[in-house]
Length: 282
Ligand code: GUN
Image (cartoon, rainbow, N blue to C red):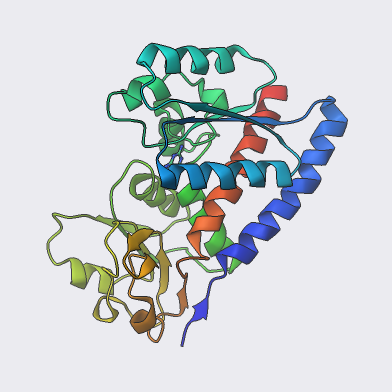
C-alpha cells in the first residue's frame, strides 16, 4: 500500500507561504504583484481553469487582471492586448490560456509576451534557460511535480526517472528538471518500443500522456514513486493516466487524480508570478 501524495495539501502550503511573501513584497515595493490572465473564446475547461487561477491569485494577495476576448477575435486584436500588457509596468505576469481558437497562431501570440513576464515558462528564452541551468520560470505543471517530490523528501539523486509524454508543456521540461536533480532520465512517447519494460525500471514514473488509466500495475516497479499528470474527462468523471486502484498496491508513493498535480499547477503559477515580480524589481 503506497503513500498518497496529497497535492491539495502541498499546494495549500505553497499558497500560504506565498501569502506571507506577497505581503512583504507589497510592503517593500509599495505596489501589488499583478497577474494578467487572457482567455480567448469560451472553452468550458479553460473557463474553469481561468476562474480557479483568478481565485487563487486573489487568495495569496496578488492583483488579478482578467481579459476574456470573443472566440472570433482576430490575431491583431489579441496581439494588441498582449502588447499593451507587455508595456504596462504594473503588470508582472501575463498568462494566455491555451488552447487558443484554431484560427490563431499560438506560437506567434505567445512570442509577444516578454520573457520577464512569462509566468508559464513557455517562451524559447525561458525553456533555453532551463536547459542551460540559468534562472528562469519553469512550466507550472512540471514545476509542481518537482515541488511534490521535494515536499515528500523523496531522494532523487541517481534514481531512474521515466517520463511518459514529450509535450513542450509537461514532458520535456519535466525531464529537464529531473535531470537537474541528478536523476537518470528516460523520455517515453507514443513511438517508444518496450514501453512497459522501460516503465518497470523507473524509481520515479511521471505519466503525462493524456490516456485514461494508461499506466497499469504490470508497468510499475515495487515501491516506485508514481506521479499522475493526466486529466482525462470520461463518462466516469475525471480520470488520470494511471490505473490508480491497481497501481496503489505496488507503488511506494502515488499522486491521485483529482487532488494531485492539478492543484499544484495553480500554486506554481503563483510562485512563478512572485518570481517574475521579484526579478523585475531587482
Ligand atoms: N492550458 C492547459 N494547461 C495550461 C497551462 O499550464 N498554461 C496555460 N497558459 N494554458 C494551459
